Length: 104
Image 1 (tube, helix red, strand yellow):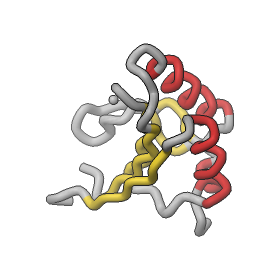
Image 2 (tube, helix red, strand yellow):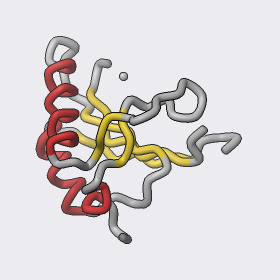
Image 3 (cartoon, helix red, strand yellow):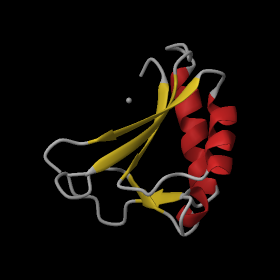
Image 4 (cartoon, one colour):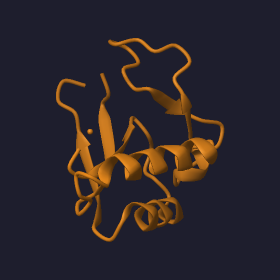
């Protein structure tokens, strides 16, 4: 289970527009190699469809639908430039939500 989560969410996307925005955001993250498909998915240990990609370090500072959200589980803080680019891509009311997951 993840010990922390970072969620970038766009709060104004319509239900009709959300799938296209989610696909576009996923395609962007895959295209930039920030994430890559999970090599060995496992419902308990690796429930995410994606894992950090070779360019994941460019998104960090130190080294589901009525809205669209991009989740980064157990990542260090994201770089401001990366966040601003993602915010611009997702829409006008993006918010950064950080939380600790109980029991982790």
